[in-house]
Image (cartoon, rainbow, N blue to C red; front, side, top):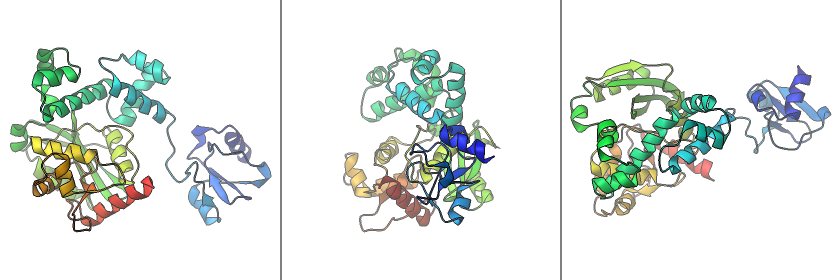
Length: 346
């Protein structure tokens, strides 16, 4: 009913976002119901079931509320703050204490965090601490110092419970993933079909292509002895984040990784993650950044062996001679990713 829709507009009701848009005849702009702009006079307002209907009627999209974008979950901001608190936490942060900081009940925080991030707050905190440990080890810290700096009070406790999460062990990867259980999903994106696969510890494959069968065959070739299970749910949080980043959007959450790599590959990939969104670096510039200016070819090989597209943004590395260069998932996709990030960053 138009009256119900008008009340939703007056109330800036976020729950109505995605259900309809309203257009203002005097400005020629259409908005989502929760747009923070000044409310127009009712006599100047038209309602449309979708943004495409408003565009066909001659209206243009509001730059402030971006009605063409998917509706924003009101919990998104809370989860972003929760991630920031967890990233800064020195030790264990109880779920109840985290919920009181961001607002909401522990139950809803746990449920929404898992839905949006793909892991629980406890698992996210563990992944952040492990990431800090990895950076310390790769930076040359001794094991004891790296454990202490990452917040582990006991080296024996770490080795008992978490050492396996330092990354996929080379022996397992070399055996084709024998004994591993990998779940995967395939979703649509602006760059075609995207396969997102992971273990209980994190992403182990992100690939782009045109056909599901080819993507699945590539995953089988990568992990021929692993147990592979396709899921329609369970990896949604990770898949949504990957698809968002493909549009050039800024990361909302950290993505845990479970990939096998050499120390050199990790150093290169860490450098790639630090390249600002919307910018590129040459292979030589990355080599200089990791302290090995003569290792441009090795940097290129490390980029080529990246198995988790977008999560590790190897598309941001280009040849010094110009152009985008090679890309495991196609040069046209690489160019599209670079262009999308540049547009979003403007």
